[in-house]
Amino acid sequence: MTDNAAWMETDGYIAIIHLNRPAARNALDPQMLVELADCWSRVRDAAEIRVAVVTGTGDAFCSGADLGRLIPLVSGGRPPEDEWDRRVLADRDILGTALLRTFDVVKPVIAAINGHAIAGGMELVQGTDLRIASSAARFGVQEVKWAIFPGGGSTVRLPRQLPFARAMELLLTGDLIDAGTALDYGFLNRVVAPEEVLPAALDFARRIAANGPIAVQAIRASARACIGRPESEGMNLESGFAAPVFRTEDAREGPRAFMEKRTPVFKGR
Image 1 (cartoon, rainbow, N blue to C red):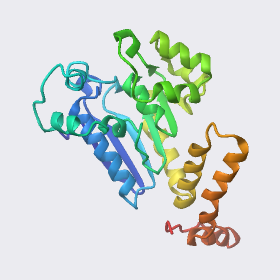
Image 2 (cartoon, rainbow, N blue to C red):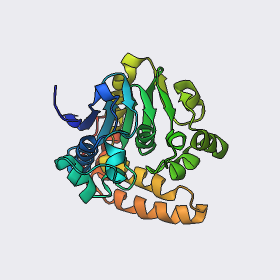
Image 3 (spheres, rainbow, N blue to C red):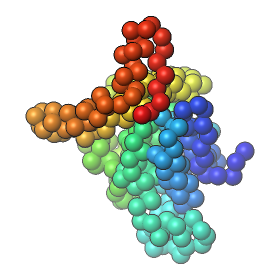
Image 4 (cartoon, one colour):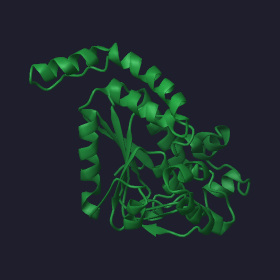
């Protein structure tokens, strides 16, 4: 077992990122923030990676910030003690990178939510594109219960990803909802048995990775950029994303493979 609090492995075109503090329910301490941020940078920069899956070790996905280690550090309640602490203090945007708040990995990200996703864990899920959850998982942003702010993007993303009243209920009460309710709200793609979470997420990842990678990334970028825009503005933005895709080698290979009744071979160019 690796000593890393967050680590990454690859399976073909797929990166699998593991949150790895099971004894702490994968709470975000300084080491996990740094290593998770580094994993996302690797996903973005590696041409051979087309899709990423993020999951937790043990029976939780992520319980949010480590209230004993991370919050006192960033609030000035304790001094830095090691390299992880010092890097967090030196790079104040590392939280935004780790939680995909201010960092775009460019490629699709799938959350394989093996257990509770609370506070910062829920905010990490909000930064992903597809979400497969265990039937035992629960979700919520509980910061308000401890008189702190859910600053990982929840006040921006939840009202966009849920009906407004549902989002405000979660934000202002700090209450948790179960996976079935989160599915009904449209926050999740699938709810499956606990042992099926990672296999189901990897099935999605393989289906996406088999598609043209340039087209996948452009479609993802367009969909995200056009959220909340007036329709005419969105259409103009979409044209800007679409045009370069049609000029790629892959865009010639796809139709040719269809006509020749064979599986296309996409090269990402």
